[in-house]
Length: 151
Image 1 (cartoon, rainbow, N blue to C red):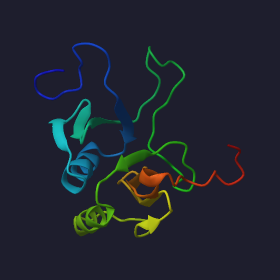
Image 2 (tube, rainbow, N blue to C red; image 1 turned 120 degrees about the horizontal axis):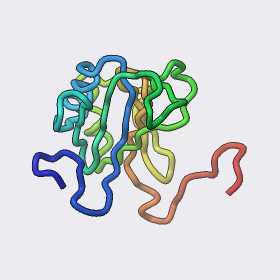
Image 3 (spheres, rainbow, N blue to C red; image 1 turned 180 degrees about the vertical axis):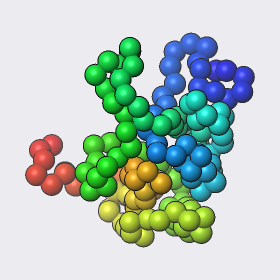
Image 4 (tube, rainbow, N blue to C red; image 1 turned 90 degrees about the vertical axis):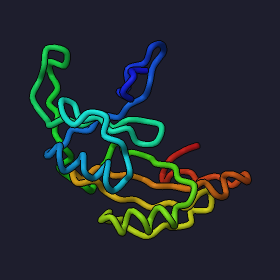
């Protein structure tokens, strides 16, 4: 990996997550100051090391030669989500208290779902973030199948 923490592997691959954001400085502050990430690169693209992964953020924009039919923009409907960050924590109650004190707004407090205790929050652009602590799944109790789904 690159010497300054930038996600550039010497071999193999590293997983990063890209977010299209409306205001890079606002999002950088959220992921660094509220969630405790480390700013690796401030802009172009903003890169935050968060635990054992990276969040990469840039403003939206129109097509480019390598993605000729793609326009990037932040979410427009917070009620419809096709992808979200999933953060696993060791102590969800402590995490909920700490991040709430720093201004994070959770949809609900942590809820025991048998397999795990979890809750959700949104970043400044409305991206959904699940925060979960494995509980029952550590003892063979797993999640119920999705509503209307087949397993």
